[in-house]
Length: 155
Image (cartoon, rainbow, N blue to C red; front, side, top):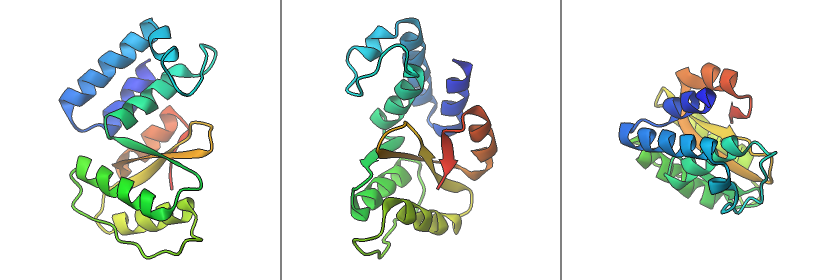
């Protein structure tokens, strides 16, 4: 449980939202069925339900987005721009890519743009599915995030 608290501490700058998320994760830890029974991911208690619950809470609170692997880059760009607003990053992406550009390449291009501002990067959160879950975090948190869970990486 502590691992998930440390991860959200590194990803959520708003203290009120952070406290609410920790409370919700604690409740799910105590009573997994409150998350499992209403979850569209069709998970069981044998799955890493706390990992998925944390990811879903990040998504539900606007700190992460999930897009299908075949989604176009415009959708990814819109989601990233929404994340930037949530994190108060003053950058709006307008990346010219063709329809053949895959989302992974798009995210790498977006990270190069973000790098110009300094300390933030786009992170991939692996949920073992055919979709991309991504968030924004500080670059100086990357080692700790990856130490806490290898399913978090920079694009």
